Length: 435
Image (cartoon, rainbow, N blue to C red; front, side):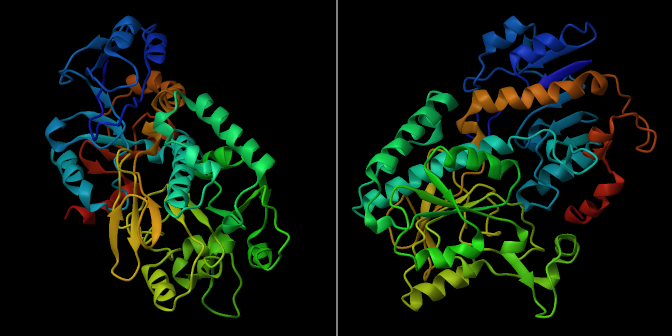
């Protein structure tokens, strides 16, 4: 079984890899496996690292039965009757990937998507979410510090860099903790008080973001305590306030006589509307870490921001770190994704236009769509360590059979979107995306 590792080339910062050399060396103890790795000048592990692991480093992956990657594969790379495993970003019918999906069908390829590798309870097993949250929170702090400095407000946050400029995660954490200690000792300017960080969601991305936020002096409050905090003159200048929003805090039933039910919301989101506007007059920073689909209500709308501006309601909101990065999704003012080299823009609410950088009228939006690449070595290592467990059985699977008789682990079978160019039962709805 020849297994290929495609190099990442979506942009110049994508240095991650799905399998690291150490894990390939371990897998190669099985003499029936062979790994072919495309050369890369930006990958966090060098070509020599892979060669020393026992992999063959070469450009041509045409002889591989299975090819792993991370980001979407370009259509010109695809070949007939292959098994491709990567984050396809197709299950919502994302328009920018429909040509790729259609080509996979035409070539009768098999597509397994990491995003859908879940356990029996629907929990994702192979993910970069924690590192998206970590890098996203670091970059949000950087953007916040830069924004305050541009407004003439001097704070220790101005010392923070983007995640990609730290030597590694330990280096980043050490320096952020030092800044946190500085805040404990010296406090923050009164113009920033109370400094409230709102985080939406409680999954892997949110936990990664909180891992960084909790390096600072934190007082955690509940969503229903936000308004009263603003009315209290005794809030602490030596702390940041953290509030985590779950679904019951974000939406409410449209009918006044109805009560919130989590499963009811998942099944019938049309019966609910956003109540996030209740919190927007008080939040300084929003970190968006929640899954969103167009069937669900938005959290921050263009209409709200425009109305607040036209009515001269001064919002304390400085930065939105949209880690989930659904363009015009739950954070509607995220109107274009960005990249690590040009990560933020200011959204002007009346004209609904953007200006890259942290200066201008409006809120700063961080919308980097591949944040884990800013911590490539750590994120690749954790990802690879989980992924490697699936490979021995995967390499022995006969993919020429019907889906019903396919002898694949339940986790991978649930993640199989296409089998030999045919949509599997759970993903039949995607046929309409390429019709």
